[in-house]
Length: 238
Ligand SMILES: O=C[C@H](O)[C@H](O)[C@H](O)COP(=O)(O)O
Image 1 (cartoon, rainbow, N blue to C red):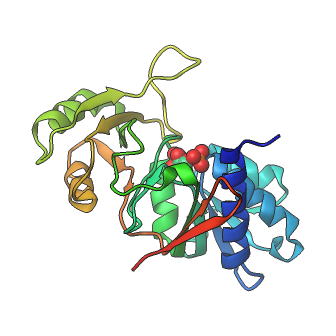
Image 2: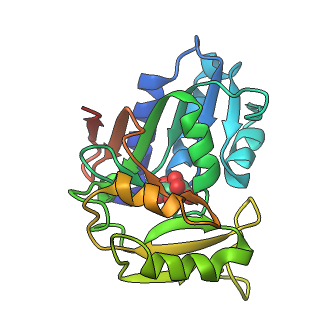
């Protein structure tokens, strides 16, 4: 039997697909992670969505698209996307989000920014009053490998907010660091509750060696959270 969390992911994803993707759309961005799997499952159930071109945000989402038999497109071919749908690790009421638990934040940011509408989907655990309180693994920062020590030093010494910890993300079934789909490393930097996510994101982004920061500030128009009881809580950007 599916757990409450899995049910939550599924109801959020299904509702988001049903309310945001229509047969009139031509290009849809597909995020990464375990919640997005349900979004693709729902897309595959809806015959009228099969002619659309789907743009991936990772190796994982490319596989979801191709193995489902959907049409795969690239962001070079389709730099303008109708709707991008993606998961999140933590979301606050202003629809600021931490993303990158799966190390995909760079391509996710590209595909989210290229979209006319960005929609987030998650289970109830991802709702937060303030970023940095629920997702305590740290803000994911993709860095060019050569610069990871320099970036870590800068994160610990040059920001207006001092992190509680910074860690190079290590692989689980391989000795050594996680290597992203772009051949880079990920540093997770935990700041505790983040008072100003936009400012922090900008400061980190300016550090030499940083490719992308997993802080998606007010980018989503709407977020769907699947609850333990099977209902969906919908947050809209004000
Ligand atoms: O890098 C991964 C992505 O940002 C995911 O969208 C995020 O980690 C949420 O993943 P999940 O749906 O598995 O909780």
